[in-house]
Amino acid sequence: MSKFAHVAGRLFNAPLMLRPEKAEMLCAALVDRLGIAKLDTIDGRSLGASQLRQMAMDDDGWYSKPKTARDMYEVRHRVATVSISGTTVHKLGGVEPYSGMVGYDQIERIVADAQANEEVGAVLAEIDSGGGEVAGCFDFCRKLRGMGARGGGKPIIAFANEMACSAAYAIASCCDAIMTTGTGITGSIGVWTMLVDMTKGLQKGGIEATMIRAGERKARGGPYEHADKETVDKLQAWVDETWHMFAALVAEGRPISEKAVLSLEGDWFTGHDALGLGLVDAVDSSEAIFDAVAKLAR
Image 1 (cartoon, rainbow, N blue to C red):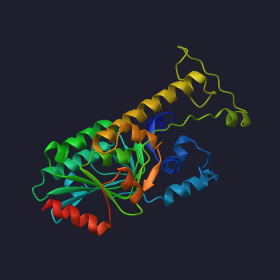
Image 2 (cartoon, rainbow, N blue to C red):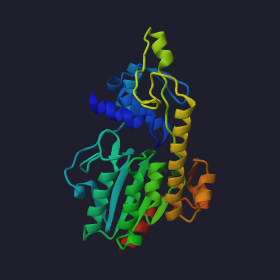
Image 3 (cartoon, rainbow, N blue to C red):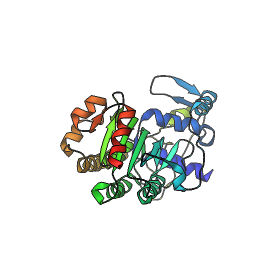
Image 4 (tube, rainbow, N blue to C red):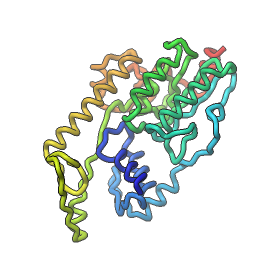
């Protein structure tokens, strides 16, 4: 149970760069461990525990478990295709994704192996992710930038197939170029967090929680009491600060200013709209994108 308390602490009351529907899927996957009885979804549905369990079972989030970084990418025409799929998280360990999550540490090991592989001339980071945790993201992204052509390594090309949003776009922005299809989604350069208030639910269940604390600000923002203004303001400042860090990171790697990034207000864009904004470098078919990277690898 202590491990799942740690997971809950990473999911709630902390800044996330993650699509909201993926957060719902994570809640569904942890319904029993977190004691979730009901979830009101962003599309207005109210799902009970049994429906949440089925939702989690329907999610195609289980992966095979190879043992080495070299097993985690395919080399064809001197292109190493590295898959970045699912929720991006901090310190997952090993090299293999599992339960719909991929670690920044895993991606780093896999890309480093591809860079060292004599059979590889370029790396194609094929991304299909709505993002994930802020923790560890920016440090990894700057390492990734130094691993590519700008840092003296082999070119690393990001392919948004079909989504590179939030933290996943942060990763893409630190590659040497970003390509996508006409329907590919990129952007969502914003940050958010959730404040969970269970007080009404506890009252309905005849349960009263009394917080006893040493230190007036200790454990503020927890689910067993209403959040006061100071707590909300502090979380807002934290989210705003992270957003500006995100925008600065993108501006370092893309032909778009930090001010222009912020003006997008965290919105997402498809294909040619993203191209016009400078969020991607090319829009084409999957085959054409691979051929372009293969030419670069040769």
